[in-house]
Length: 253
Ligand SMILES: NC(=O)c1ccc[n+]([C@@H]2O[C@H](COP(=O)([O-])OP(=O)(O)OC[C@H]3O[C@@H](n4cnc5c(N)ncnc54)[C@H](O)[C@@H]3O)[C@@H](O)[C@H]2O)c1
Image (cartoon, rainbow, N blue to C red; front, side, top):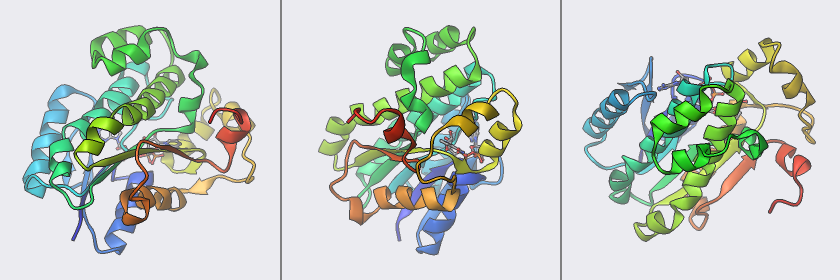
């Protein structure tokens, strides 16, 4: 039986991925701030240490998959967003790399976002601070901005971080990829649509397929990247967005 860590398992996409994996008979170690096998706050160093200890205790030091999905929406303050959505998300990849290397056909999937494609708003130095592991600097640079700026920064940095790990992780036999969802029907999208500041931009986003997607539909892409059908897919950012990203920037390949 495969053992997969899913962060953000209590809601939305994390819950949908967990349910789909359990339906396949796989063991899920869910991690969240509530209603999970491991309760930990990925927004700070102490919480991440608790997360690592709790997960290693439950899996016995070996994992076959990690889905780094926990995240805060753009309606939150910028500092917690960059801490959870980038530094917490990357910690859940890096800190379990050794456990994955011992796994069976191991695979990690980070959940980025369509938002990460809109990099023009990212303040200078933020992506560099993220990749240098300088959380304090990234928080400082984003403090005067807004939640959306921090969200776009975190999701772009996370997509880049997965690609930057391709060589080293490949040598260990661990695949790593990212999924970048577009409009996905979860409590996060509900909150964005209820917010007067963010709703117009969400409604204005072109979606060629003409609809948003339930979390269970995005979960299928995550399961594909986790599983044997994607055995030669490594270092990719898969936009699962009804065609939004390709419409906005068709020539970025
Ligand atoms: N909903 C969308 O339209 C959309 C689009 C693109 C990307 N995403 C991304 O998909 C992922 C899942 O989001 P969702 O839409 O299911 O949202 P959601 O709010 O339903 O779920 C997010 C989960 O993350 C958990 N979480 C938040 N902060 C945490 C912390 N500090 N420590 C541990 N767990 C924490 C929450 O408790 C929650 O269970 C997120 O990374 C989000 O940014 C969502």
